[in-house]
Amino acid sequence: MTVRFVGAGPGAPDLITVRGLRALATSPVCLYAGSLVPEELLAQCPPHARKVDTARMTLDEITTELVEAHEAGHDVARLCSGDPAVFSAVAEQTRRLDAAGVPWEIVPGVPAFAAAAAALRTELTVPGVGQSVVLTRDAANATPMPPGESLDVWAAAGGTLVLHLAVQRCASVVEALLQHRPASEPVAVVARASRDDEVVLRGTLADIAEKVADAGVLRTAVIVVGAVVGVAEGCDSHLYSAARARP
Image (cartoon, rainbow, N blue to C red; front, top):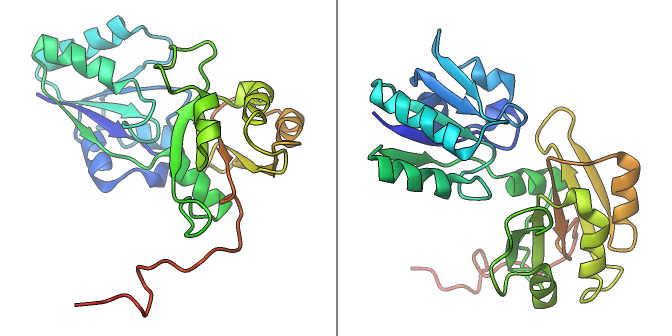
């Protein structure tokens, strides 16, 4: 049997993919993070499915659930918030499944940064404004960052930064960014993107930390830093240009 790591999307239950919904509806076992996956999605599980909230479980406990389900002949839907490719802890789980001889696959989902961009009504790669996007996180109280991947490095490199797992330390993040970027740099914080209780905060490096504190945003948010935030100008792309040679 197969363990499917399914991207559940950023929060709105209708932003799961058709393939992901099919995997959920046909798997007699479902593992999910209770604080991140909407109840409406869990209602799509088969009747009498085993549903396991992993929010307070260790990696070993999660692995045991996956291996035991496989040994019992059950497919598993392992729901991941957003997309499994970004900050999902999938790599460490699949290493253990490989060691146990359990087959697995990944079903992509809508990532949080895409939902945040939609909430901001902006393209993250606006021609003439910003063409590079770095997805990163804050290193405090988490696994250390690899060499050369500090926030200081990315801030100095330019482009658009999208920070996950960092809103609780927004003030210190801003302090680090101000070492390389002006106080006027546009910033937005999107909390609970795509959900009914979505919160969008816009500002600059000079005032965004205060706005986050005033709004009481503490989790489930991304920080978007760069000129593309709410930009109204920019040049047209070459893709649709009349000057572009077409076959």
